[in-house]
Image (cartoon, rainbow, N blue to C red; front, top):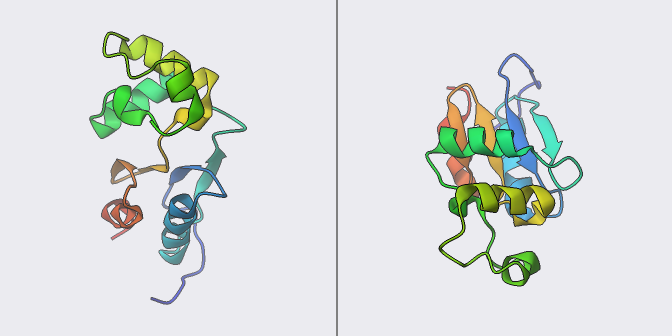
Length: 126
């Protein structure tokens, strides 16, 4: 696929971690499609609890679905406890953004957790 001249006419946002290969692959596919997305470095600028709720709802996911279970805070905070509410889980993600599953991409065609990374193709411009 030939790279197109980047455009911002198709608004996309990626919640990105630069040293994550999945996140880098997703960003690469977005750029190959001709879109230069808004990049949210969520470890530096974590989404608010309200934004996390909006993202989860848009993807049809729960707070628990957004958790990375292999990160240290997951064990330390005992987040596997099934009695924890979405509110408590969102609070944990806000306090420890490393817990946020990545990458999340928002586009006019939908919001997706792009795992595997090829899923981003579902929401790229037609």
